[in-house]
Length: 142
Image 1 (cartoon, rainbow, N blue to C red):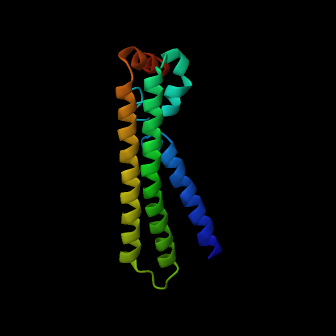
Image 2 (cartoon, helix red, strand yellow):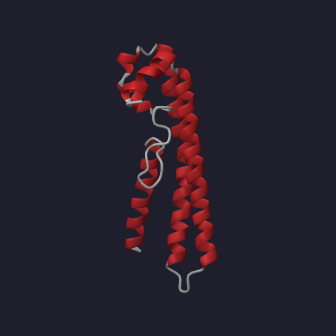
């Protein structure tokens, strides 16, 4: 079971990374939101140039904290589904329906995480002025 535990740790690490990273397209395609939505780290790295107000900074922080707490719940669901799936893969014969059920549960949790991420990115964009958006767009080469 040591192999399964190692894979579980890798899976949880990858899931956590996905939750903290910006939403990007799958399979190496360009970020579909590039120049339209901005990750909190991009906004905060340019905080001085953007002239973020205290209210904007506080609202950005609140949005990030909220999404992190919502994502944490789904990370637990993702981990539970993965552990259950790994357990099923140790069985002989493997019950395909059970494994696919766990995969479906994991994908639902992952989808919820992505929805929270996109919602946060939209909230952040709505906090910015037109001038701030234009500055960030110019930084992205748009």
